[in-house]
Length: 425
Image (tube, rainbow, N blue to C red; front, top):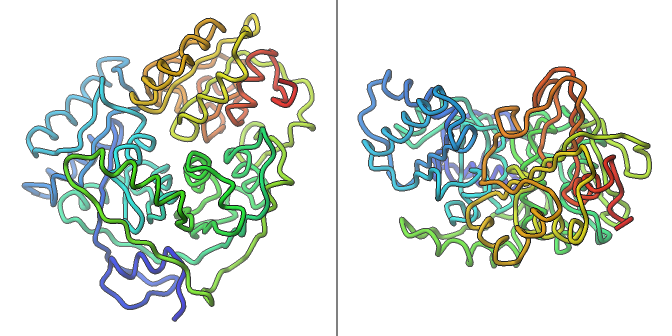
């Protein structure tokens, strides 16, 4: 039977020659991931089941990133539980304040995920690693506990949607615009429990940061996972980053779809035709081209998150903010994805540009994205954010509004005080 990329990876990890959509399998895991919200729940379940040790001290990864630096006593207790568990289990890949990052920016940077891996994480945006040609998906904390103990998880094999990328995006269009365009086209349930598989001649015109942003938001289309065809850019990225991990060196395995693989649908996406795109409240599918947004005044801009906190995002933000000032009565908060990106921003002079423009440049955290801390919205306030969700109350009060956009649109909006077209800059 012909198989897609995802189906081939799952078959290999289940020890099967082939799998088909809808089939239930048990697969071996390469990485099991949790953060400071989901990890403590998983640890409690791990203890309840009587497990004594994790299946592999190198393959369990714990990253307290949502409420760190700890925002209150409860957050501190959550992180303490993670820290003590990591110590007791001798877990190699535990990253906290000072060396932590936003988990889905940190793991690729550390070389912990490579092509061909099967990764589960107790966080819905674990699908990010599909940019590297891995099968990665979010799971619940109970499955996380079982995964930590056994190194295995069950899956229902997903069917797939093929996205054939062609053309080259214009100057101010990034991967964030592409994925918002796609979600606006197919809807938040358009890929429900399916694999979104990206390939085509246009792939060469998307950077790894673009692809990581796109794979990150596959879940916003309802997908089980998003995955990109591995090309030379992917291989080069993995070669650069896998050597950073001292704990264990990983070998990538590239899986290509069969020529006659069956896809539920096929979409041809002309990257050249995509405009800077904004998702209006309160769903990621509620998209408009930048030319259609009208005059939307804002109170806050957040640039960062596991979607857009990487170096290219920082670079385009600095390019727009250089020599300018954030509009009066607008709060601009910038979060690099990892400590390494933070350092790189300092070395490149971006940190100085951000501060002189009147923005806050902070340590990596998921805080504002989930309405946790460091950027909460009051009633009636509007924010442009490079995050991935804009549900009711997502970043604070239920009467606030979140507009999703690329770093270029967000930075331009910070300067103008309303949703703005980066082409003006």
